[in-house]
Image (tube, rainbow, N blue to C red):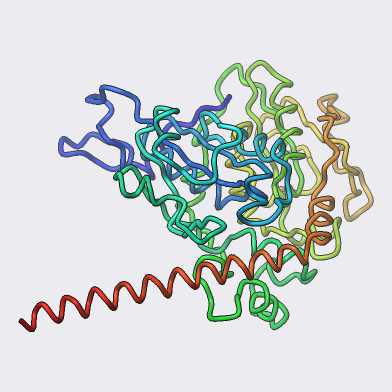
Length: 402
């Protein structure tokens, strides 16, 4: 497995000028014991927002355990998930910052769960997670001081991705100044009253810092087998994970480079409103996978001589999906085939991005109802928080008056 250490971007200096992981309990040379962290969630339709939460959590300690809820638990509290628990377990295992997963983690995080897995504290995003009866699922661990928070990733949510699939427009490829898209976000991420800051839709803005945080920063070493694969890797899913795991197993010491095609290129061969995720989002999704060492952002469609020589590629792999010809009708894999370094890989998983979109469309009404319900619950909490703050302010004012 590719093991990523803390990147400089995630570190801060202690008094003596030594670097230490941000938010960790001790500096490495003084640390007496391993700091164990707990994250839990549905991890349904895992996207780079989930990966970023797990990355931030890992930077707060040493060993990260991800608890994943069962289908039954999710159905009870939120409505049925799109992916089965087995699919979701596999997806979370593939995220490189996760050291261990716990299958069937309880929906409400208790001190008992933290103690059972020897975790110092639990980490969650700065959005609210509510039970079926509207209670904060982290109340108990918050009261005990064993709760840490990380920032939610702006510009991505499952709600937004589902909306893009249902819309069938290309607004998300470059910008969102599109009346259809605005109409959709108004219908999809809003409850009857107001607008929740957690379920709403906003645009993702890529930064070099974010890419640095996700990248492994590792160069290929002598003796590594450099394997190149290319594609859209849109809505990064378990079909991709199974394929990349199989690619990773092709060598003793693999260094896997993924070439990602630009949005326009993907749209040329996939049509409709593909890709659902733009190039920036797809870059982070692929970098979060533990089998990937490097990503080429905007790779040429033809895997030609220049690319193979530049990266000193030993092996080029492609899955069982159809290979579309290049613009001039030529085979994009002609050069690796000529060199005898092309290998077709059968991962045994036929899931495609199309299949996922189909699942969503079939569940469309359930999704819209689920989001309206979630939004209404969140708005009720915001109202309660406002009232509480007002009450505290008026009590403080009354005390000051005496």
